[in-house]
Amino acid sequence: MDLQKKLEILADSAKYDASCSSSGSDRGGAGTGAAHISGVCHSWAADGRCISLLKILMTNACVYDCAYCVNRSSNDAPKAILTPDEIAGLTFEFYKRNYIEGLFLSSGIVVSPDRTMELMLEAVRKLRQVFRFNGYVHMKVIPGASRDLVDQAGLWADRVSVNIELPTDKSLRLLAPGKTKQNVLGPMDRLARKISESKEDRRSIKTTPAYAPTGQSTQMIIGATPETDREIIKLSEALYDKMRLKRVYYSAFVPVSKDNRLPALREPPLLREHRLYQADWLLRFYGFRADELLDEAHPVLDLSFDPKTVWALNNLDKFPLEVNKASYEDILRVPGIGVTSAQRILRARRAGALGLDDLKKLGVVMKRAVYFVTAGGKYGGVKKDTQEAIKIKLLEHKNINGQLNLFSEADLVKEGLTGTLTGQL
Image 1 (cartoon, one colour):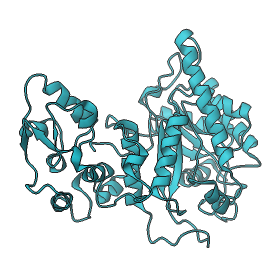
Image 2: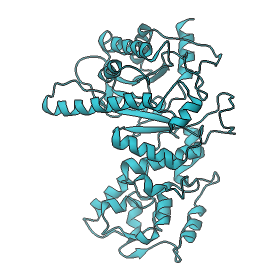
Image 3: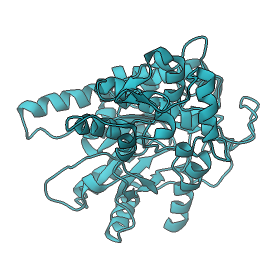
Image 4: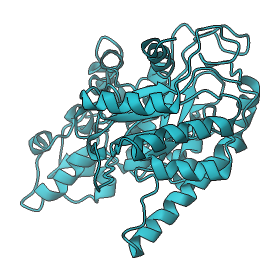
């Protein structure tokens, strides 16, 4: 099989993995490539740049037979494998032609987890040492690989990730019998410790090599198993707290095969995926805890409203909030006010009291925020500010797709942004 055909097969096989991103790595020193300007293939960085990387599998052959995976062993689709030399050479040649800014490398399991990791590490080592490539590299760490091989991954890659895939051990046993939760969490915990140790060492010895400088991430498949949104968000919260993950990615289950263990879905649950990203954003940047967003009585995210709006509607006793006096933390909890606009409010009110018209100029989404704030004592919401009255008003701003204008699912799908949500919540 020629190299071009291999690349077609392995690039296509990698498209279901959403957990690839770069964020601020700068390896420094001599060499080719600049890691700090690299990013996700066909996506957008936090500052709005369109960025790209070569996103491939080393091989789409796999010894496991995970029901949800297009690369499972029972799938008779064409198989291919790239050698370490081919991976390193392709990446460097693509970079020289300005096709890409870096590499995202994952793989099916060939022979064993250890053998797979050995080949992937050899490819990235050659890219770094032989081709002197200093650009961004994101490497998947194979669950079940030995500790020594896991440790090496962070020395060569800017970001590492171990895909948790399914939220519970029960679901893994059902759909991925070759994997266990411990095989995933073990390497993840090891990487977290190594990253933390490296940061500590670099504080005292600046020449200490950086270890996975942009951290680690993971991915969960949404909708293939019956876990609730609450279970998923609680797990993500634990991963952020205990493993210090940079990002948890949520991938709506795409039915790529027929299996009686899989649910019969007409289409991927993209709106649910989108709501989970919004809830995840609240955990990471807005100071929310999982138990504030969902509880045992309400374990599923509302598909009609974003989770911050739902929280505000359920806590109307805390509103309306006077923006000229409220703390930054409280302002962040107002629907329609994001991190950027909250910071602008704090800066602007030092010069004088703000009015409702001023808030819009500062980037506040007033179609939602107006029901939850006052400015100089003035309130612009509905007179009968009950939960139902506010809901009715908010629903009037929905577009024909049934989603609030700021978060149109149709637009997100069209632009390929369902997994890279940014913006004001």
